[in-house]
Image (tube, rainbow, N blue to C red; front, top):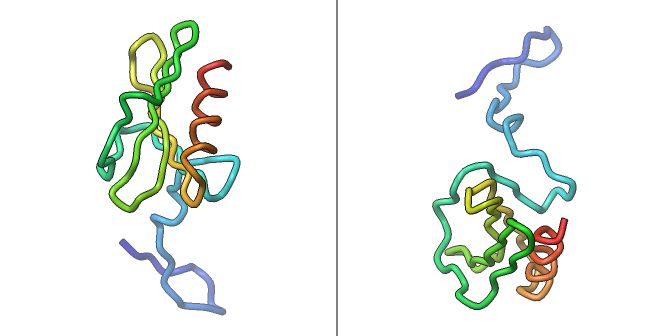
Length: 99
């Protein structure tokens, strides 16, 4: 859906969906409060537990890595970290589980 700006200097359309991206600390990290539909594989071996928190590392269909977060066995968010190695994502998932 596109709307036009309300200024007389420019009449170029803007994309409203650009302003509805999830908030994150790093621009490349994507945090979504819903289940991602592009997940291809959940790891059986890269699962981090700590005091009711659990993080499971996944791979997307595009080859990026991320982790799914649970608190007391309830899904909270998916975190996608593109352009990073699986080891980097493992460390991030482990750190999240220890918060």
